[in-house]
Length: 154
Ligand SMILES: [Zn+2]
Image (cartoon, rainbow, N blue to C red; front, side):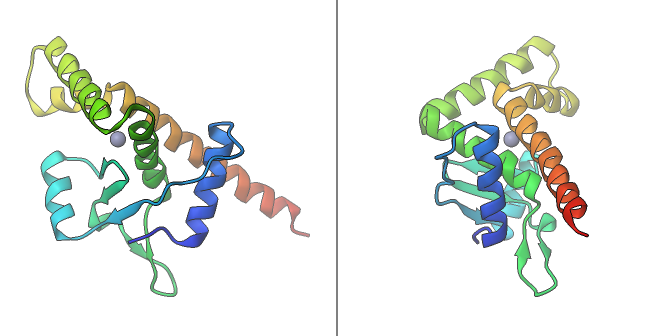
């Protein structure tokens, strides 16, 4: 599955502003939201998982537009694309290594292994903090954009 052209353009524009890089282009990303992805996301307990340029989105989060096109939640897409960018700047293996190392370090600090501690360890991974920040900034950015549009209408 690919992003709709509309979402693609909007998200690319957001990242240009967010990264302050006029030349930023979204890489070719492929989205998955099928049965296997459902199992994946259920096991990991997250809404999305990114491997390189492949993004897996929990199928329950995919909605349909009025003309029956599949639509992905854009803030989640921005979160996962931030991981794509992190993969690109660190390299695939290095990213996974640092990600898992940070998770493990966080978990050890808590000295507890229950679901809540695992969740906290996950949320405190710097790559995750960065991705959540991008998604929040996107929501703000998108809202301002809609407001501007409304204000400019007579
Ligand atoms: Zn994430």
